[in-house]
Length: 146
Image 1 (cartoon, helix red, strand yellow):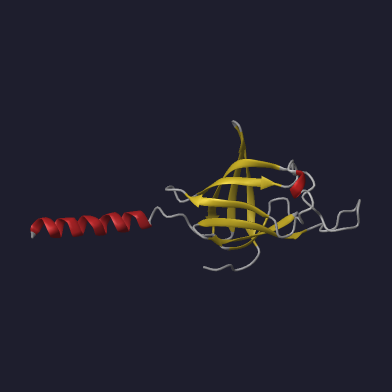
Image 2 (tube, rainbow, N blue to C red; image 1 turned 90 degrees about the vertical axis):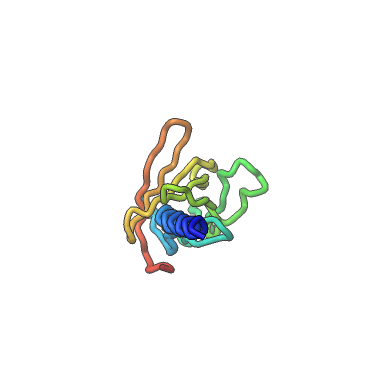
């Protein structure tokens, strides 16, 4: 009987400890550091997903049409509209961040990335190409789903 109580107590301790390491879910709409886009962050299945929902310049000045994913190396994707484009689907990491890859429509490349909620109003998005990494601070533009 005593071992069953110890086992149950251990299970509760493990469950509580694991709750503290679950990544925050920064749902809502975020403005990129350069202010050129807004990204809607929401859950998609078990991942954290980001979709472009607004562009500062939604119309391509060269064509007079909505911006498309023309830098994508996959020719079949080059006509996709930028608005509505999912740029990441990341997994929760044990350290409270989200990790995976992020797509940069400016150059058509995917980069290793992590997302961390620095505060309720700011996300730190870190992208890496090889050993070179850079951070971008995204600012919340709506209340999101908390």
